[in-house]
Figure 1: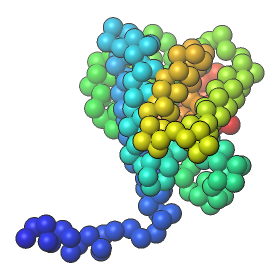
Figure 2 (figure 1 turned 90 degrees about the horizontal axis):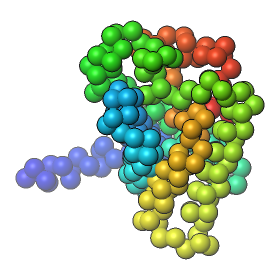
Figure 3 (figure 1 turned 135 degrees about the horizontal axis):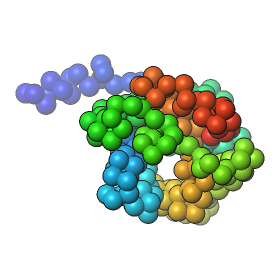
Figure 4 (figure 1 turned 90 degrees about the vertical axis):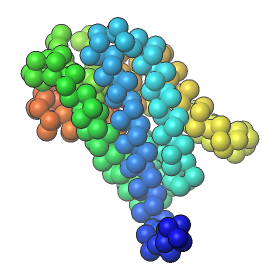
Length: 246
């Protein structure tokens, strides 16, 4: 009887508009990515590297991305990244409207993912920093959510790092999803997850391999409003926050 009732309601709650369905898929998949990924980073930062190692952080992000891609793979393709959506737009594989809508959904999803991480680790963060939300210094916790460069990294160095890392990501994703390479659909999310883990282990030292405007902007906006303040954007005299967005 209950199943009959559910089946009767299904048509009334089913979203018919494909664009809306795809936008929701991007939103929820990106939220899942950022919740799991930021939790991985939280354990590394809050334990000062005793719970997670840098290797573990990269593997963790890769695994989370794998499942996040699976979540919306057969709905929107699970871009989870405005850079990927824009790359597909330039290749003629995505319309301009979808590129914009997906990017907004991804950024909102990243914001929510950061919020969920903050909720589950609120007590641990407060215990770590004594309630003083810091962007830099020994008790800095903003890096759990968004990326921040090492002190030695110049603006040019940051631009080169992000451009090369993002280009490597987009090119390899294109290779993985290219039908001419005949990689089975069900294996593609796993390979994309391994790809991100590889990027983290190879070019992640300089600034945490954002390689994703939504992944960085959404959580950065969250930390702005959640107590870390304007320094989340003014860090290094406003010379950093815009670089992951390019």
